[in-house]
Structure formats: structure tokens, C-alpha cells
Length: 119
Image (cartoon, rainbow, N blue to C red):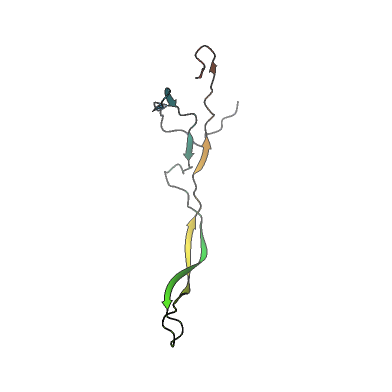
């Protein structure tokens, strides 16, 4: 018999939410929850959280602004849009999440021939 310590354990419970009822012109339809998305992370026995890995991302943003120019000084009836383009360099710090994500099994469905519905 092996005596391994568990890596993690669930600390909470939840029930299936009630279905959302949609009234259509023909009949009422229920939208049921069919699956849950669960997120968890590991922690040390003392309760401390693991450090999150950071990375730097260099970004260049381009800005466009339009200025109206009157064109030729001798002919003020013609005007055109003269775009002004500028760029700005910046560094953004990002983090990879230390949360793990899993999906529960999909809820089983069965077709009821007598009622002509899925249950």
C-alpha cells in the first residue's frame, strides 16, 4: 500500500444552478448548465503562494491624427487631409498565471421519445 500525500484538495462545494427558462413563441426552453470550468493553484503548507513568473514586452504604438491643410498658398479653394503619424515606445510587464484550469465531464443527455425532448 502506498502512502502518498495529496497534492491538493477541494475546499468548497457547489450545486448545479437552476436552468434559465427562455420563452419562445412556440414553447418554453430551458438552458441547463452542462459543464463547469474549475481553476486551482498550489500553495505551500505554510499558506504562501508560489511566485508568478514575469516577462517584459516591448511595444510600439502608432498614432494617427489628421490635420487639414489648405494646399497651395495661391489657391485657397483646395484643401486636403494631411495625416500626422507618430510612434511611442513602451515596455509592459506581463505575468503568466499560476492557476491551473480543468473542465469537468460534460453532463449526460438522453432523448425521451415519448415527450420528443432531450433531458
